[in-house]
Image 1: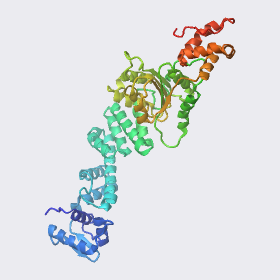
Image 2 (image 1 turned 120 degrees about the vertical axis):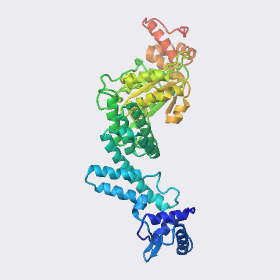
Image 3 (image 1 turned 90 degrees about the vertical axis):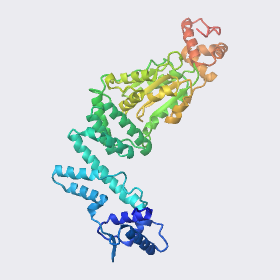
Length: 474
């Protein structure tokens, strides 16, 4: 007879878990009803017992002074047999016998324990305990098979279990180890990046030492020799920043905002990657600001400073994400044979290369979110500065990036720029001409700089005055 009532199922499970031994009335009521006890709990329990005897046979369940007993052998209850086999495996002296018993226990497993049975006690206490024993047994079995060179057979099971228990790092460690043994290092790096991101987002911590150690070893072998992530120093640390301007003035507030990215480094807990978007129209000096700040802080990034001009301001020839990713991976001498074919795979590898290292990346002249998103680091030890004319709102939303919205400098800041280039005395001597130049340039820093450069040549002649009719589009 099928037990269609949920409480009858719960009742027989409670009895079966103590097969052949009495279960007290208090324990049964706790298992079946939890805190929601019926008015007359003993009478209700007796009614359910009568129905259970009708379904299983009058002699199947008996009552003695200490409680109710289900007359069944413990070996006929999978949950009890499972625990018995694992207990016996733990006591076994012979490794072969331990392996045999563990395999038998694992083979008994069917989905999640006590499915379809409603009981807070089973769900909160018994089920988690059995799941933990099962996963530990699977991991011991995996270690044995990996050592014996039979790890490939474990891949389907490990992929399924990491999907069902995504925050159990010890399962991921076995999966990465098996992929490594199967000569699938790129896939292993991709999985590491997947779990690293999830752990950071959901738990606010980095992966534990075991996973990080496997990753370091895996990355070291993948990159074939002294490489990023292995504790060795690259033959050439990338220093790719363009030349800084000789005389940078202004943008004090913006520089302070950029400096706060470095202050965040000393915050508590795990932080996301530090990203800032410098946004503004043409001619405001976005690149100049990014490159100047990068030079001033380069010493804080001993593992490299990267620079890629994405040419997003040129509709005819923007750099594709794949091309930019190739430039970044080339910077760390990642062999072409180790690179995945997809942009997503390359991005995962790039983030893996940066993990644990201190690298500054300037992504200049970005076109849009899709172009730049895969190029961003994932490690909190890294900083990325992105310049763009468009707002790149998607980056701000997805990564919590800071935004520096550049505007035209004030008249006084524009005057300081000219004074810095031409000399304060000369600018003070011709205030009306300076004011006309500033107005004609629309206070655009790059235009002012070009004009100042031209006037510097004239300034070599002491008798020359600043001429307001100097061509501004030269």
